[in-house]
View 1 (cartoon, helix red, strand yellow):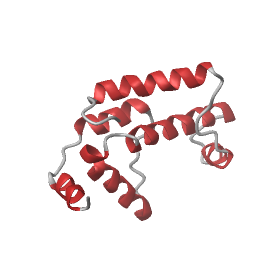
View 2: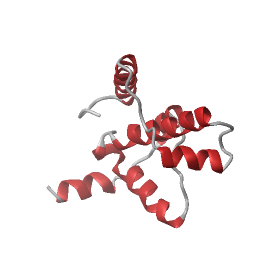
View 3: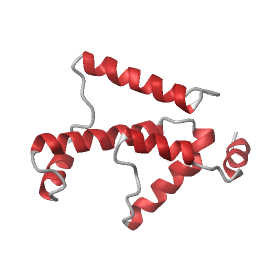
Length: 118
């Protein structure tokens, strides 16, 4: 996400990049171990569905991690800190990732912490 870019503009640019990559036969997040996990955990009924689930999850995390670090560092840190405790709160699809960012309220401490580290 570029400085001062709106969330909507970032989302449209992200979707445009995805479309370009797909048109050029690119792919995202096709990690065999994750696909097997989705199939074995019965989240997916077959390998194609598992690939779709893994790709959607990969893109949603990529969308959040590439968002403006100044605005969303608190959310990114919170998500990462909950993961080791077994709480996987990362969004599973792009619309949910967009909602995470749109509804996120900064505590105000993040920009101060970042400016002190410069």
